[in-house]
Length: 304
Image (spheres, rainbow, N blue to C red):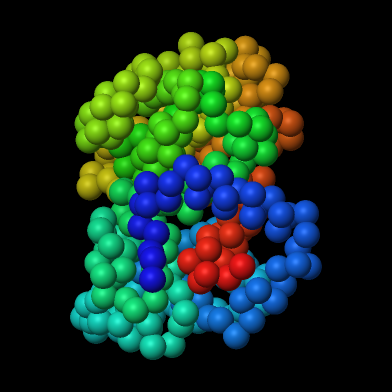
């Protein structure tokens, strides 16, 4: 039995295989409609979610399976003080696979050690979000045809942005990747990511506060929101929340084949006027997330 807690739990070859499966699902959906018949996915979401929870559920339903679970901690026995370990031991009696989101870093790892079925980390605090990264990778692959030789701009909250941390880990294993890290000084990429990934593997990167200066160089622009729920101080959030707002005029110097991405939810960091730009790929990311979660469920359940 195997769980996926971190994107690095998957080898490059396994990611390539998941992408191939996802592309086949896109081309031949009917082939997969009964692959998980009589299987159950439990969605244990101790933190609010729209896309991740619903895409896991849609993925399982489209594979012919069923879904049980809860969408907030106060809808579970966690509200009574039950431990994560006891919750997943119980749910393992009812389900074949678990997708879990939790506000505390490391909680899905604890869950995977207690569960008797595979656990997928659906986001833990500011730490990791491997299935969002799979959605991101499929989007990049479908837009660019490759992960090699890309300049990737990561913009906004790079300190608490778990999607950013996971994506850096994933892309750093491909050749010719160059990162431009665009953020206020207070929301810079944490040292543990800079030191343990970028510096350790000699990945070229530069840090800047200026999105417009970086724009002409970018093949990928990955926007993120400043996350109110990660701040201890409301004044700091208010001061930083509008640091970067992408509007059509700011794309004047961008490449014509730029891929604009965002893990969503968006607040105001991308103007809705950008949605009509052919380079906007964030709603494609949403759909790609469902396909990659379908592929991952099949892999973890050992379904051919």
